[in-house]
Length: 145
Ligand code: 4NP
Image 1 (cartoon, rainbow, N blue to C red):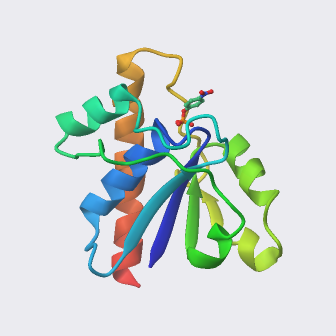
Image 2 (cartoon, rainbow, N blue to C red):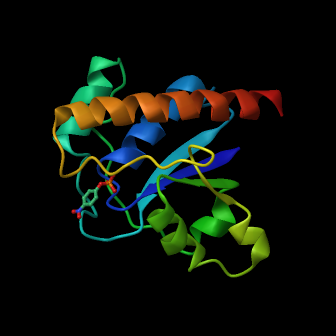
């Protein structure tokens, strides 16, 4: 299975989702990547607060580099998980057909992972916990398939 995690900047939430889901899956069988709908941070490492909260929980994401989501991602990836409804709209807008649209879902079934960029460090811990719970569900689904 090939899974893509998407947020706005690809420096706070989706790098965490990439690292967390990788840690829950057999990476010889599955591939997990992340991207942002915006280009502001392309080429940059994750936000230091995301690197720190991941590290605290035993996950190393420092070597990731931000990239922008492209319409080619619809062809390569089997599933595309977005963090909030704004990401959902930005991704869906680039889909060529219904089959591509059906690959896209909110990571937390019907809730958002809020953007922690302008908040404090406790926001990153909350976001880590939300993503971690959602990724456990996703990993179980993938392993049961
Ligand atoms: P992310 O957070 O979408 O979780 O990576 C953001 C990072 C940067 C910006 C917005 C959101 N920004 O506007 O620069």
